Length: 154
Image 1: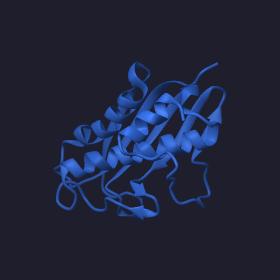
Image 2 (image 1 turned 60 degrees about the vertical axis):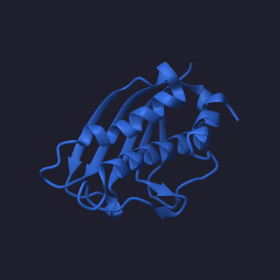
Image 3 (image 1 turned 180 degrees about the horizontal axis):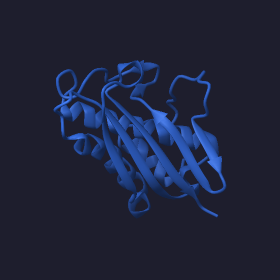
Image 4 (image 1 turned 90 degrees about the horizontal axis):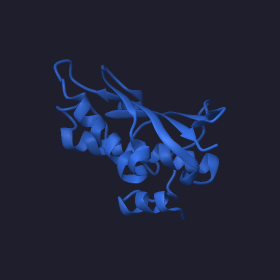
């Protein structure tokens, strides 16, 4: 297990755990030295952990944890695709979607859960551009969805 993968485990996200399969799309698509990770919702194994609108059905703190879980799921999918997180040069971009009430304006705080996790795992290589969006609904009623672009080492 690599240093980055060990950090992920230390933060409470076992690298062996995967999300349900069977989608019509790839979890990770590689073009040149860029990895495009499909959106992940907060599955913990085969259970969707955080369902509902922020902040009325899912608290801000729980939604932030959901964003971290989505991000861990992306990193697990990336590891499965390329073999090791050590082959990542840097995180390029994170886009986070928050299933929220119309008057909720703290999407950026929710997606900080994703940003903090990649900084904790990758250090400076985890610095990234980011967009945080509020949505009327997300797949399966999930509270958060995160997608990511990563750069592979040459």
